[in-house]
Amino acid sequence: MISTESLSKKYGDKFVLREVSASLPENKITAFIGCNGAGKSTMLNIISRLIPASEGCAFVDGKKVSEWDSRKLAQNLAILGQNSHNSARISVEDLVAFGRFPHSGGSLAERDFEMVERALKMTGIEDLRGRFIDELSGGQRQMAHIAMSIAQDTKYILLDEPLNNLDMSRSVKIMKLLRKLAREESKTILIVIHDINFVSFYADYIVALKDGRVKYEGSSEAVMKSEILSDIYGMRIEIEEYKGKKICVYYQ
Ligand SMILES: Nc1ncnc2c1ncn2[C@@H]1O[C@H](COP(=O)(O)OP(=O)(O)OP(=O)(O)O)[C@@H](O)[C@H]1O
Ligand SMILES: [Mg+2]
Image (tube, rainbow, N blue to C red; front, side, top):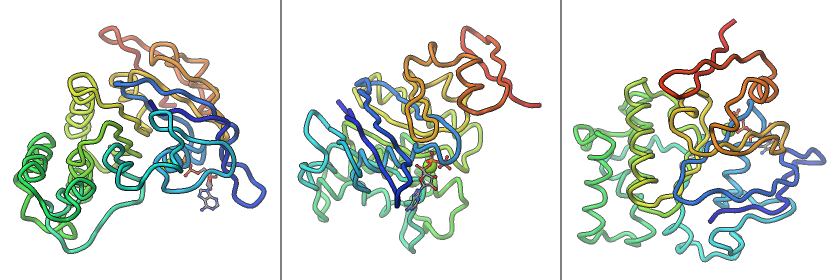
């Protein structure tokens, strides 16, 4: 399980995350929502140890993230950061194979090749395998990075705005894939998404941040309410029902 205890982060004397204590459900998709600057990336980056906390702790399987051996942590937790994109002159296949590094240590075994193939297939980008990353469109590059995270085959998959640059069809494809990984392969997925209707359709659990604090959390059903979302985003948001799911209408 991933949890945090009184987690805070400050830059100078400004707190950007304040005393966040949360236990995130296993084998589910948890979406972090909130305005720009609310602290979503900070939270994911601390959990995945990309940045240190100022106070409090994040725990992975009950152990402080700071106490994990780096390789072991990477065998258990993959993070695709909001800005951690590679634009080097390497092929898509090689980028996806980077995801295997914590397991292979650099020399790929049969299982690693299998997992690379599987990730290319699951994301539907086999046709891009020989293309160079720096010659891809923004969305194609995004798909390659998602494939890399999936190839890592970790119990925990953290994705910060993975739908950026993706068209609607690919966004749906990725969300369905994540749902399948959570339901059929017992992965625990933490995701940041701005498109609230994707959250409503595909997330099981929502953590809503405002000014560095968890203002609301609960099942998608419980958090997808007009008054909650209007408070989080500081604008009027209406909720409509469609096929038993809640749709947010926020165009003004
Ligand atoms: N290195 C840094 N130095 C100073 N302030 C920072 C730094 N990194 C982030 N911040 C601040 O921390 C706050 C939270 O940032 P964070 O990236 O977590 O927001 P976010 O919720 O992911 O927003 P977005 O939706 O825009 O990605 C912001 O006010 C940001 O300006
Ligand atoms: Mg962010």
